[in-house]
Image (cartoon, rainbow, N blue to C red):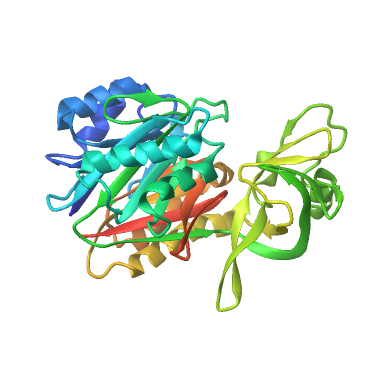
Length: 393
């Protein structure tokens, strides 16, 4: 397998996609991953890829917050980054399926997965890996839909589509079509091995409580008290919910203090899946970017600039450990909220991943939710997370 990447900050879509394609040289891929700022025109991207690589080449496309990152650094200047990763693997099979989430995200994800397997010519089989992009809001149902088709043992790695201002301008696309509220599923049967890692850059504190009343992604009470008031106390007022007469966005203020849920243990050390507080409501409730079950323990987590800039490299290093021999390249998912919080340091993040991969090409996407296998055995959706999947040459 050979992987090549190209990325640019060009604001004009025609110029941007031409620049990225030119960086690929004479690549002849049988699978293309394209992640782009929502400011770009998806139709122009699709047409340019079809003209250069043929309309039948599978394309997995989704929007990314501000842009992308590669070995060359972070492409977020001008909020117009665009990046491509091309996979050349004559002995591998790849397929893509795109669907509108509609009123039944689980069924839509299942349909997209079946379509992807059909395109790969591997219907009824379980792929080595699923690469996933879906509109934010129903990621847990999307994962369930994919698993309905390929089983829970198949690793799912990906991130939720994102825009530049949480305005709902995200979209997903394949070689021919584009869907605003969609899901795109790629099935990967590479000729070599692949390995993934999924972590956060946060540490648990001693502060915790129980979600005593919750519905989906909205928590009304923690330890029997209004969730907003409890969270404000936990953060020593860093996230204020006082005198709210209408829903208030708290994403930026809560980025360094999300809530963690124990998901697994490694040698008696808990692994925490994060939930990012998104909106404070006048009734005292808090809405998150992930489902929280009633009765779950919620623990205040702590992060900082240094931990968020160094963690991606460590995640990439862990993914490298699962591949014997030379690494052909990697796909990286880095939370868009974390990226915005450490935007001035993103070149350092990219260089850390580059070093861990030994210079192998990679494409990184900035997402509004992250999916990955927890300790390689359970696919979960979380926030403020980082994942990396490496491919053997």
